[in-house]
Image 1 (tube, helix red, strand yellow):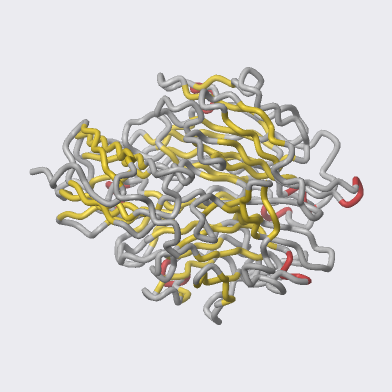
Image 2: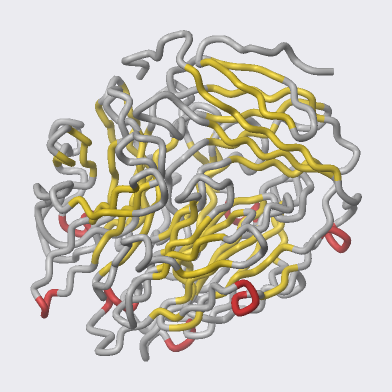
Length: 532
């Protein structure tokens, strides 16, 4: 949809930084990056757990971590939930390779053991990142957990808005994603609801002046989440059919994941037979094959024997977009089926070859799931021909904890992508990417209020190699979310000369770039021609 089109002279800022470093390239043996585990060193060592649990399935799967710049200093920070071991951590990036926990100082007092799932985004459209936190439903405790919203005052200090979800219906709130669903420019919410009791629960909530209100019926989603289909985990908004509005992709435990196309503000169930995963958990959305459209990875459970519990066995799925929002299952061609008991996942170009790789965290607790207790992290490297090769151990990522959430981001601003992994019932890990790069460009897009992050827009990089696409999202991996800023690694020998911004309104801005240059755009026009 293109309602409420911005005025032509509404100013926004796109900041682009190009850095030339060392050459890096070659076959897989030469392009596996080197990661170092630096949690203690950089000050983000923390533990998640339940002192009095686990109470049941829900809290065994719980967690929550989100990345984003909460104070506007251009250094990404981390919000990490801890179960009932203590208050959440707000690790503020000091800009020198170290973090400091400033949660109490900044008023982000998330001290409930039921807190579950995190997202940092400008919910209220005032130009800073607010904090959204979901919550567990524990039947024995009869505890209802709506999302909770802490509003940022513009300086990185927070106050909880206790009325934002006063209309919440019942039960729980898991992974969350934001986008403008109804064309009024503010951000609406999709939320996972993992509750196996019968009945339908609302999954999409529209933002209004009175807070968030349930909108499944108004948006055409009535009946879409009933009985076992109500067991949903991870939503992501994505324009899969390239018609300018945000469609909805939802992973579904105990039932296939689902696709809802947005047409003029109404969602239509468009799940085809190709969507055949059994226990969809986490997700990642990106143009992994550089053909210009968005593909969808769904993490699930791979069990090569007879399952000891009520889970499927056929593993992850990679759904390749055919260009019109229809998908084909290319899991086996890609080689990404086997990863154990999968959860959070993200696409990123970890080895700077121009192709986005896939990181998946894994593991499950419980006696029946003993075979999955020590599942290692998987890092699948994109070969550029539709295939991936797994090489996490070769890259130095050796974690075998209960992986739940993941944040993929450049925390030290050296141009490559690092990873923070949250382990449930255990120690989290920060893996710093120490690989040399030839060049990189970071794009920070500011939009017109209330969508100040330009969520739903995209950035395209054109040059001698494949056109690279990155979408601006407030999406979810599983209980976790990465920052919305965009970063491209430039492969050695490639020359990229033009950046194109496609705004949520449908307007396009084009420019070149030069090292260390800030470029200012308006929505409908540009101030600079392409640079040499």
